[in-house]
Length: 77
Image (tube, rainbow, N blue to C red):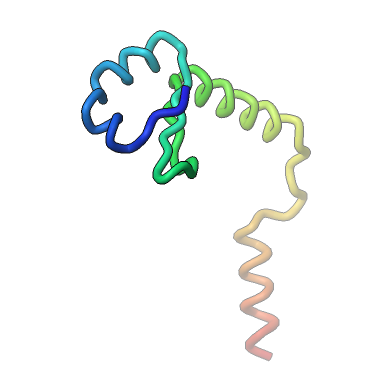
């Protein structure tokens, strides 16, 4: 659903109820899309996908602390 900024100002409570019911709302200004209201479940799914991606990556052999310490040591000499 596309809604103008002025309509959002008048109907925010109603629009948030619709978002809670699973509807996504695109907010427009002068015909251009500027923001999106979407249910939180979608955000949780994105975070879950991110966690799965992180878990699938092998751990580095050298920690970031060690790398930084080595870089600092090398830069001094």
